[in-house]
Length: 556
Image (spheres, rainbow, N blue to C red):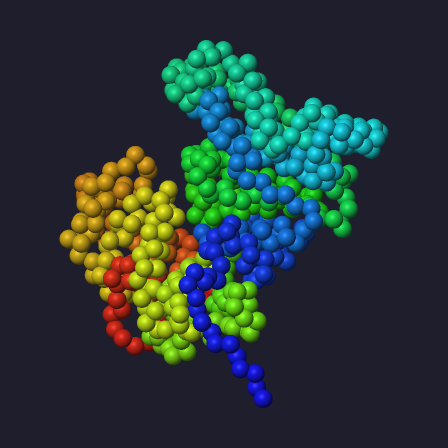
């Protein structure tokens, strides 16, 4: 006789986990979905160490998995690094404004921080005694090696702080340079204390003198010593390739500061990653939001930095439909096993089996995401909440949830890109109640000017390309309607609001699947522009005709 199965009942406050990894430890530990990136990131012979992905794509979850699976790993956060001390230094701002290039210092600062963290990890340096034992051991190893004496001296000079917190080392390293720079120039201390404003008060002759003296100091920083230290790490300390060591850096996209110095620090960190590649059993792993990485390259564009040399370090986080469905399925199963029943309950057991707009319920949800776990989890959680007391999520619930979800995602998109495009949400009104797909030449002059005026009514101190183009078009008359709309649509494409079908014989392109950026020249007046389904409900957008929808977007 068959055993009766417990009925499935969706309960209030039930969830398939939290949208953010920081609050999702239970689900990440029990139903982590590996897309193949874990093996790659744990392989110290594989150069990929810069984890790139948009908000909610799973960067932090991947780093958490590294911490779970490895014995020798440490995570550094912006708070523990104390980078705000560097960024708020009036002395450094003074010399930056005077024209002194501090890139060498920023790179050396990262090398210093990472070197000390690795040594602490390797020798478990947690107090003064452990530190003394470590230095004595090194002296015994290096007494006959003349080339390593410089490295030993460097470590001895800084040895009294190895066991302290990371923030102390950052401040001490920075203060040393501040002292050397201040002593080298013949400038009143009052100007130095004013930071960048003080440098602006100097005459051109004084600026040249400050620049020359400052560059001399920077170029004499212990670069040779640190180079020897890296060689020491590679050849004498981390020479057991059976033991791997990891330093993880995450959350650099959080609001610790937002200016050009921040971008220079991050660019220097990316450059430093290559330096540590020669230390084989060691891997420095950095997680960075795709849009922040784009801004770093854009804001620090200068001669000598060839981005293509660093692409081998990139590990872009991408998800396929099948992987996201499996992720949701695992979470549904774990939710029921943990709280209600040991029976195997799966995603298909709680979602409608009949198709919606010729899509399965899973595809219907994923069509309204950028193929990121966070969005899929948010959508499914809301569906479960609205189905409390029922055994299944209905088609009606899926459609109801879409309205609030769409509004939430549009607001989140504006927040995600607020630094780059403060007026994104205002300008997105261009898409209100628009049929999709549409062409630029279908947008009237009146509609274009209404959007430009809407943006211009909210001036901001923040630099905004959208505001600048609205000024050029509406006030300056320097660009045509077509040029203005091409630029606006290029921005919409970049953030994911729209997809572009450039030519009739080409497929649609989406920034989260294909090229992240399109030049406005690639967006011709006749190109088809599709509003992403995530935002249909919030914008009141609708498809021009019924029938088969656009080709299914796939990733991976």
